[in-house]
Amino acid sequence: MAKLIELTDDLQVHSHSLMETRSMYDEIFNEGCYDMELPDCPFIVDVGGNIGGRLRKAPVRAG
Image 1 (cartoon, rainbow, N blue to C red):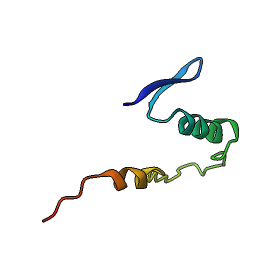
Image 2: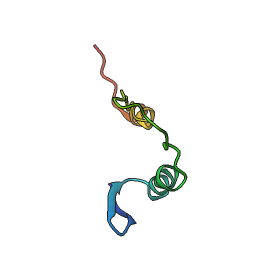
Image 3: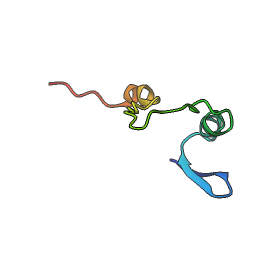
Image 4: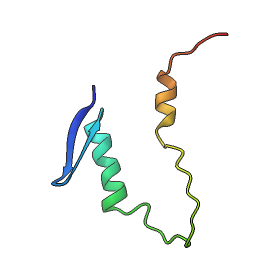
């Protein structure tokens, strides 16, 4: 079951993993791994980095 995690005074998220959520927050907001300049009309595709973990647990249906 997801738990409410407070990352900053004004940011709370629901997550299943405290360590993973804090690590992702630090990587994005403190280390700036996505800091980059974009053109005026960027085309961005978010494919979801964690989709593989969810698919491994998904039920398989035959037929």
